[in-house]
Structure formats: structure tokens, C-alpha cells
Image 1: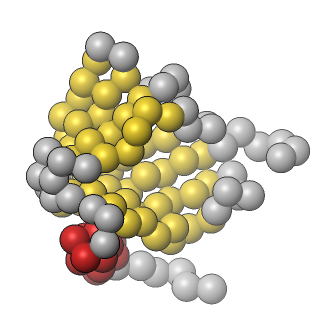
Image 2: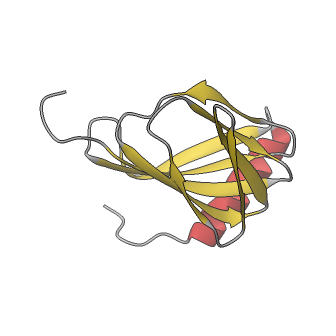
Length: 113
């Protein structure tokens, strides 16, 4: 199992893929849906995003490149390269105001799945 990843390379690769395909791309680097911890690099081209959803567990977004807007109800948080956003527990969405790549970190509650 790989123990080291280049976030810069993952961001670059996923952005290139997003630009060629549907405007978004993602790769999970650590963990998965069956694990407590999951870290995923998500790339979005300007104007694309993730529709409103709820994340199972605590989550953060680290902006690697570009600019994004995290929205929950009437609240919005702008994120740009170097920012860390705490994802709210309820329904939220994410949109790219310019081509962007983020690391989504999710820590699910431990216990039976």
C-alpha cells in the first residue's frame, strides 16, 4: 500500500481529467466508504459543482488550487488555495468559481456499517 502521495500531482491529474470529461473528477487516496477515514481529491472546472448532499461524519475541505464556494442554506464560505473549510453537518453543496481542486477529508463515526 502506498504511504505517500503528491497532492499537487493528484490535483493536476484530476483537473486535467475534469477538463477532458464532465467538468469534475475525483480519486480517493486514503480509506474508502467502509473505512472511518477517507481522503479524496476532487477537481471541478469553473461553473461546475456537487449538488446539495449530506456527508456521513465530520468533514473538511482543503483547497489545493483555484476557488470554491461551500453553501449550506443561506450561508456561504469562499475558499481559495491554502484555505481549510469545515463542512457543515447538514445539507450543503460545493461549486467552483474557477477551476479548482480540493481534498475532502471525512471521518465517519466508528461502529457497525
